Amino acid sequence: MVASMNEGTIFFEFVRPTVWPPAATTSLHTIVDDGHTVDFVCWPDGHFALIIDKGGHPTEHHFQRVSLPDGGIVKIAVSWGPDGVSVAAGGALLLKLDDANGNVLELKVKESTSYTMGLVSFPPEVLSKASPEEWLFLMTLIDISQKLTTSSRYELVRMSALLRQLLCDEAPLIYVVNRKHGLKVAFEVTIKKNEIIPDADIVQTLWLTLFPAAADEVQQINLERFLKLDTITHRKVACNVADIIDVVAHVFGGVHYGQVRSEPGGALAVLGNEVFLSNESMVLHLIFDIARVTLRAAMPLAQAIVSAVQR
Image (cartoon, one colour):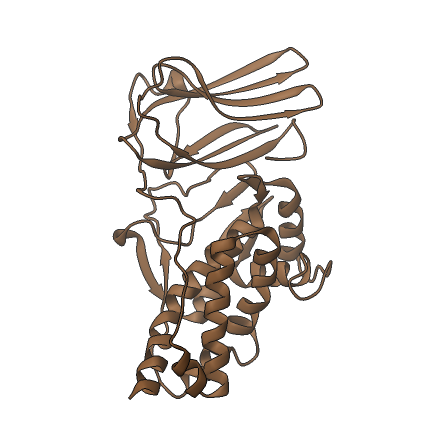
């Protein structure tokens, strides 16, 4: 959701209803602002459409028919602006209805939503016997998992401080703790084949989901490469993982408030006010994604600490 009805972006996850296509034209996402309406709908033949109504003058943009398996969950991104309208669903950029020649696109779906992860815990005796840096590391993982479960705006903003200390400090906590154990810390991220359009390859914003949805999307990378991984481009400014952690920590208030320190930071500050996913800032969804990847990467080291303490 965005501030202006003349251009904007919508991201959301859609759970296929029992009957597909729907028996009647069905609204999937609607924005109403100052008498203007943006409505993303599905028609009974299974094709999507974006209807922009400015003061009683609707404009309709129709896209190709799609197929969804029963119970499937698909990511949908819609963008409109001076350069046109585009829709990405399930990792594919949809053709205009007239250009599709009747072809039905089978969408790539997931079996669960992107935002589910259990709590992390460690035995009390391990926490009491661990070294000070190991204790801090384990408690940080517990705290991150709790914030991911709650996922309130406040918790997500504050989580950036934990990620900064864990990954971005001059001596990242994850490295300090790993000196004793010598593990290969690997971050599992999504990779996309060149012919696949990323989840939101749209007019204003290009968004690459970091957290893998399937085994064939996984690539393991080290911390340095993870921090440099571009995950979103907004208004032609590319922003990587380190940029996102920095802007939530220093602009959104995780550590400081309102300190824009770079061009990517400025782009993310704008993005935070322009693009929303499920009624929350897109930037905070990005920090959520980063935290899930980080927690998974840190767990082998946490288990090594637990095993060493319990010997």
